[in-house]
Length: 300
Image 1 (spheres, one colour):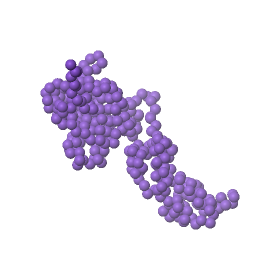
Image 2: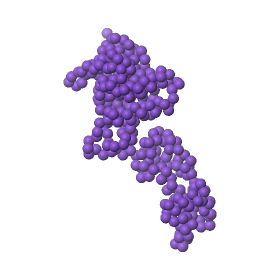
Image 3: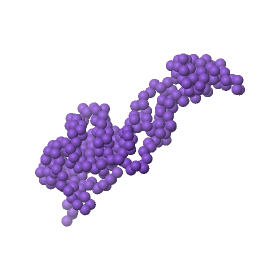
Image 4: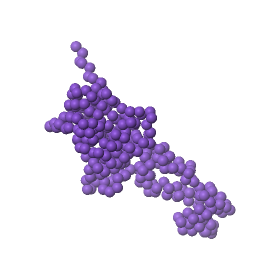
């Protein structure tokens, strides 16, 4: 006889045919789910170890109980409304659901978590602590704010979803992060070669600075804060500082045409007028452009 076919499960290990609600949305490095089961029948949830990141669950109602199996023991946990759990996908997870449940869940990628850790002020954090059935009113409030978007994703504002997910991820690092070892260095985030080339190309094409950080970050599929940090780590300068250096380099080359008007050099290098050009050039080069050019003429 053929072996019985196992009932299908979703990506979080839930039995798909038991789910009354199965909703999801995608944000920047975060996927949001709502999983609801009303059936009193027991079911087992299991996920193999993987590199998917971390999973945060926030209970939307009282009365859920689950038995979580660890390597050498098992523990029963009761979830009230507002209770949360945090677990790392790198560890195998197996639990018996002993009652129905209603959870908003955040699957946070390692990249998104690292960005939140890098942007946190103060000592370097080593990741999120694993907690189970701990009440957290802040996460409960933010999870509730996401439920209308999960119910009607076609009408959801992506900006709103991104902002709430960013707030939740930052809060998780602040409140549930654990300290890194004392000798652990902060991770340096740098741009890939392709992202560095793309960013520099976009900046050069807008030598007058008429481009936003958001436009460049979006082109590199990075958050604005992450892009700024990574650009500085990669080049040793902020995007604005790098662009100023490019303007001045171009200006020096054009000034070697000794008959070219300073106003024309200023316009070609993206300065608003000759006065602006003179002020910036003097600040960085230690002399006004006319004086610098006369010195170059004598030196030749």
